[in-house]
Length: 193
Image (cartoon, rainbow, N blue to C red; front, side, top):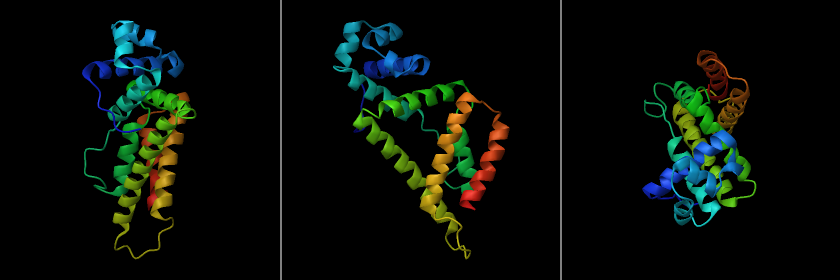
């Protein structure tokens, strides 16, 4: 799936589809439902997106664009460990908007089982995140005389898996941010040193 450039109307309709997906699941995101949610006519939705797959692809592109929240400090500062904890806290479903974004992401992950374009986009996004994490770990270990417990690529894979698993748990068993921060800090310390 190539990066999408959406018209203002397409972006508005994709946002309406995302609201539906967060509330009712991906199957509920029909042309008619998006028209009702957005206030546009059914014909306007069909004109903006000739197929439901194109509408869902646009909604997924909007989700990706909206859910990229990086810590306010440069990557790896003050430490890789601190930066990764802040990164994960910024994306974990610890409040209503982030819970909605995770429900949307989970819906698209399920849809990816039958949509190779969305599957490829999710895989590419995961690869980019793992690559960033691995490069930060490598940079932080430069000049360190100690033998690493785990190689940077494996640590990056484990950090992303930790985040995805924790996100799933937080959807059905919400917890306070302070408690999540403490557990994340300990887990990240064990993974990246």
